[in-house]
Amino acid sequence: MLLLDTAALPPEHRVDAFRAAFGQASVPCRIEHLGPPAEVRTRMHLWRYGQANLFTTDSSGFRLLRTPRHVRQEDPPVVALAVQSRGLGRFSQFGADHAVGSGQLMLNDLRAPYAFSWSGTGGSRAFQVPSDQLGLPPDVVRAAAPRLGASPLHDLVRDHLVRMVRDAERLSQDPAAAILGTATTELVRALLVSAAAPEPLVAAVRAETLATRVLAYVRQHLTDPELTPERIAAAHNVSVRQLYKVCAGVGVSLEQWVIEQRLEAARAELASPAGRRRSIAAVGRACGFADPSHFARRFRAAYGTTPREWQRSAG
Image (cartoon, rainbow, N blue to C red; front, side, top):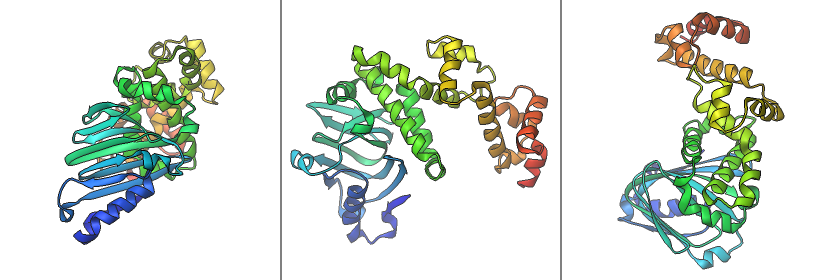
């Protein structure tokens, strides 16, 4: 959902609109624009995923300051995990200063004072989750903040958030949007525990989030025809037997689920302008089907039409 696009506003109204939109999407803070009011530019989006949300900002330079007075206000406690999409962010919390480059993750505990800024033009994509849903002690969240890059889950979680933003309009309207929010919260929780490494929590959280991490890994490697149960299990340091057991525990038949995800990707690609110009075999290979005949049989069994017929009907 588009919250604000200042391009549609007179320059004299942009600062107030920026502050109002930010206050609607996040927690109270002071906002200072690093340039003349007439040059303020921003686009903000907010999508709901159950109790969590995804908040994106692309704008001219500004500085946010959340003071102890803001913290004392009656706000629901929130933790935000953000991807810096453009520009160089500067973040200060708990007495430490961080430079956040494009493609890096930043953890912001909105229960505590902080400062964040960028100059020039920048962009951020933040997954905001109530702290009680995250279910981690404040000291674990605080310990994880400067160590996100050291976790082997950093890139997986970052790529998951980037993909959520890319498909946010469609995903947020899906009947399973709240479930996706819960699954993303579990991934964030696993990342923070991995980064903070509090030994009593590590084993428990790894076990609790294994299914979520497995399915996220599979989605990122769907196009690889060599994606096998053995490879998936090895990537998560579990046996193939345990892998099947974990997937069954969340109602997923692993091989069938992989086929279904690949078929959905192929169906979307065949209906796209670029996909309508590609051969059926090329689309099948791009979606992880090494054998064109196998791809065609599975597609027809799933959708009652051949890939060629579907491609032509979308033209």
